[in-house]
Length: 496
Length: 95
Image (cartoon, rainbow over all chains, first blue to last red; front, side):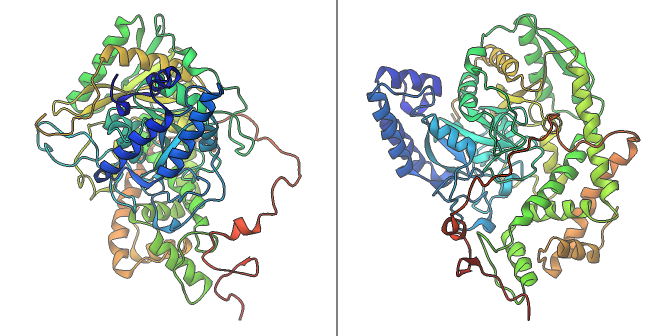
């Protein structure tokens, strides 16, 4: 039997059902791994007591024959953007100091009702704003992978962001799976950097209730797992209509695992020509070509498609998301929860609190958003960006008239070293060039590990699907996963 | 589009965010470079295009106008930096 913290959800489900080990034993293994892996800084808050209590409850249910399904007893990390009743919730920000929610987010509550065991709250970029997990008030997360050659050999690498703690925890054996949230690529890009599977579902598939809001028209929760099958299982436990989120879709949740037929024969896969960008890393191009070849071998038809407004997606996103963020983050005022820095007047207290409580990147985005929404600039920036968003969304609608899924790279590079790309905000934003358009259109997108860079780091491919067609996304992802056949155990030593 | 120090100071005030005086100049530079990069949107003709506020085409649902929650004053105030007599307490607003 493989070591317990090398199992995935599907194999642990089978082991638990057979009685090979208990949920409590599983939780213990992970609690110890987390304690031994603190150098990674993947968790902001560890919750070993919660984990053991829920694991014992799971074992008790199983003993009575009442096991609740695939997630029952599965140890997971919860991105610290989900409000968890009685457990510190920080969003990676100083401004939420000491905030212990008296309520539970719908997604974490759904996972809990499915029997999942929460190991702790995983680190993230502050308010999910970042692509390297370097903006967290609680410090950067280290990617468990190390380059085996090249200029970054031996250096600490970023795990990607914003769900960097979740990705590092799964890749580094500190959680069997994790929740993430994705606004412009925050599940998919860290999944690519850490060699795991990350699925951003269709906007509306998972409830946003109780998730600390960044950009409400884009935010979506999703699973971060070791395999495509695990992503299907975990999404099923997270998703569902929620009357408390008016944008949550009133649709039944399919059995995603059952939709995984392993058969992609006859599907038409679109390759967007605008994603072949000038100066693209040849390794990324080669990976993409390999993915195309694999899908062709699996019986798919490959078709070039055009998404003509792709080049405007990032600029559109960097108006829409900061504008929504500046409105959402207005609630952090030092009155009802979190940090308060005293001042002579109410205004003074607001300004002191928000000046001290928000980090540099969050402040930059609040300022851009405030400016874009301010009188005299609203039409030129915000309305303009919303109109371009329509054009980007229409590009996808047209493409999906003739294809069933779209294949692209997930990110323009492999994980880079901690400390790089920090001077220029726009250079950091370019990390999300392949993921942002999908977010603007609200479509499902999944990153699947598909190969390695010449320096030994994992690289992902992105599968994009039609609205609410996660089933096809998962099937195409599974075909890539099978063809790639990678050994995805993080290589932690530079010489190994 | 280039922002000067005073504009940044004004935006920061609109956002009720204290920014140290020596940070205004570098911030003006960073924000200007972001806005210049965003300027590329202006080259697109968007006349007659509907602005997109949400990706879901469903009409937002309405719920019954009924009380569904409440009687949880202690829970609501539990995280407050300062509270008095069941209220959130803030610096004096009216002289």
